[in-house]
Image 1 (cartoon, rainbow, N blue to C red):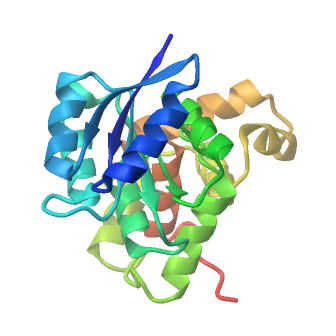
Image 2: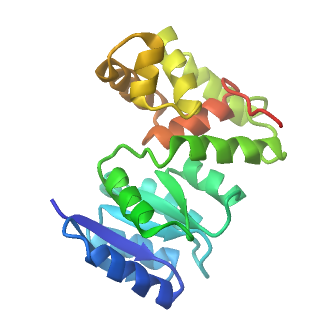
Length: 230
């Protein structure tokens, strides 16, 4: 199956570079380009994109707003969004994950990293460097961003939702938030990777998370996992 990719970035030169790279792969193709978030939302619907490479900062409707629009549309439930950011630690990245993005990638990433991110997102795994995702959220929170997580109304709401999880599902959630893969979690808990995957999928269903990236955010927002301040 060919992965249909939508490029959303206000820089035409960057979109052209991404198009050449993506179209050079036999298993993916660029089906549309967008210069702002509103256009990205419209083309995600009209072109039936599988993966959107979404720049966070764009004029008009930015990438964060566009991500919320896409993830809130039932007709686009199968669309996966990979946020593109210039900065390693960025408040907007955390907000993007909360909004439903599958993960993030720096604009300075190597070509193979970008292509691999597209394939992983398209497969529905949304495992865009779990350690990096966890690390970014932890650093952001440790710097004071979202200081109410786990304490305010937002955190309490997540804590209440965690009550629906079994003890083992909570245990798996903590390990997912720690950046561990299914294989690593399986080894720690002395179970099969398939069993871990089942627990992860059940936790996502109960918490209304689109993917693992959102599980990481939920673990921090609920206070189940606290960032370490170094």
